Figure (cartoon, rainbow, N blue to C red):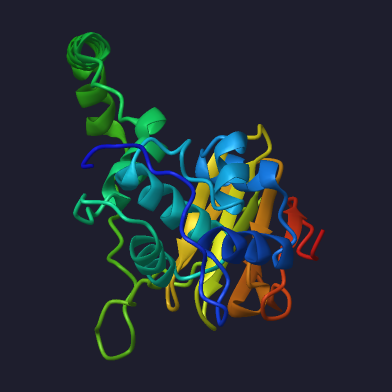
Length: 272
């Protein structure tokens, strides 16, 4: 019946594991606990445990079950689409498949909504600038006579022209580098991860425990973070990720399929 709760699924075929078993095996192989997967996906621990036992009755329906499967698969490094197709084939339901990735992505970033502009503070700042300009103008005008008198008796000012090359062209100013490594600010820790070898799941937090990033990086994508004290990383499929820390290329974060946990601080480009 459409809208009914999903119950425990049909038995999987002998040549492949069930959806729940595939997720559980991938989680164990990645070295992640149920609590870590729950934190990364915001799917409650009892629901994660039920799904790994192929019990989808706690999900609240096919739409939510598919969304949970998608989130869990990404967290443990699996392609979610085959698992969702297997779920649809093994569970009888009249509901049509619905793309729910956008719903879960929105839920994950709900707490990071942009702040509204503080117009009161902007107006106060504008008033302060205007008053400061008026005061500077009045002060400069009152001292103008003395400045004129002094300039009449003082020696003429020699104006120098810009530095030129023997050919008469101005010396070009050095252009800033586009390299993220060269732009690393001193006194801080700067970490750049680049998924050069394939897709990898990344979690980054700062010294206060604030979540900076939590998602999969596809091949060719990169992210950079800076903090005053510390950057902590959890990297899945570490062999696919290239690390750049405090202006130095550290190479691959680990081996293919390996899950590593790293910590970096200012002035310490070595893996922690």
